[in-house]
Image 1 (tube, rainbow, N blue to C red):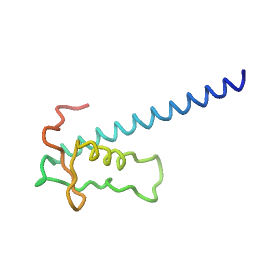
Image 2 (cartoon, rainbow, N blue to C red):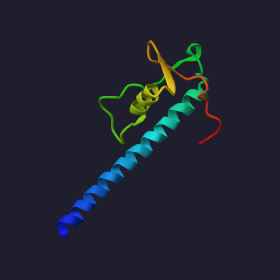
Image 3 (cartoon, rainbow, N blue to C red):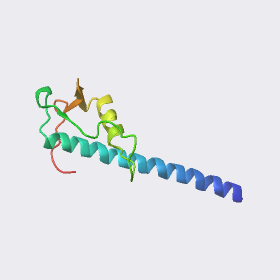
Amino acid sequence: MKIVLMVLIAIGAFILALCFAGWKTKRACDFILRDLQAKNAFDPASAVELPYSKASMFHLGMRDYRPKALSALVKFDHIRMQEGGRYYLRDGHKLHGPS
């Protein structure tokens, strides 16, 4: 009985960790989209560099989810990347209000 309970607790902790990582990644995606909108990066001519586009090798504190969220947004074509690491929102992908 104790083994079954420990396995269920371990599974629950794993699921909770996955949900937390998903929530943090979604917040990072929303932050990036709002940041690009605030910088008026709506086309290739107005593309901007993002300081968090590269993961830092050394940092203190909590994990930064923005570099992975940025690569996911590029992968799923919500934002586009130009040569030189400049980013802009894809056509028709403007935010309409605060989230």
